Length: 310
Image 1 (cartoon, rainbow, N blue to C red):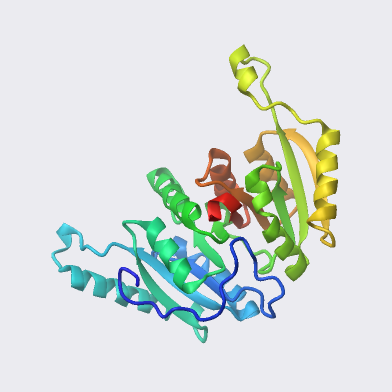
Image 2 (image 1 turned 120 degrees about the vertical axis):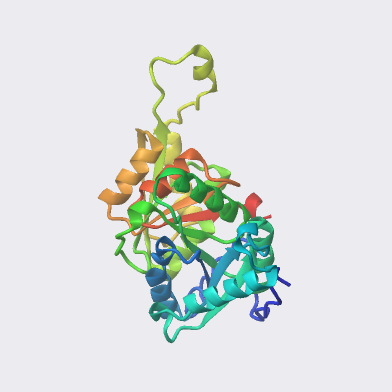
């Protein structure tokens, strides 16, 4: 039961935690698109609907709204909810959704985490797609607060379109993905998604291990707490083992470099003409992830880690 009424529960079998829809005839079966009815939110519609047409998936158009009417509105809570429903229904009937299987859902915004978890348990979406809505100023910080809540709550990958992806016209089904990979739990948690991309879409995977640059002039205490550099030989061996054990049969190349992570990731994505950047998500977006999403010319796929899903 949602905050705004009963949902018709999906009857098809949900994926196990972390499982991707590998081997299904049409790829993704249920795609969730988040909207706030703004032009920025509508930026992702063309991409989402094209993906739906290619995969045969059902599209869930979701709006997070407050059940309680604002005091200044002068309308009852019931009338406020009715207006939200009407706006969402109208949104689902714009030209881009013509002849597509669109289902609309209004979820409570006061607790996005609870609403999203409940929705996923009832409707089993396999991918969430969202714009980051605002481009600059205070709105940009609000955007990442909302994105944090969505990513920290979702048990499935979240595809985010940042401001720099405004004019993105790349592949609808990615052919080349840039994957920052540091062998952390978050990075390892993205392996099922990488397997899915390689097996289902023959997507080339470009793994990038970045050694952070440590400034010469830092205090002895900062130097103690800074990350100890890994030897290139050890990293090369770990990559070789990863490909042999987990990504066998995929088109995989890796590279090791020393750079500022957020700058290097954005630059590599553009220079290699990547269709997608894949990042392992923590329980919240860190500074590097926020910067990558904001500056990346292509969509960023945030994949929840195993511990995050559980």
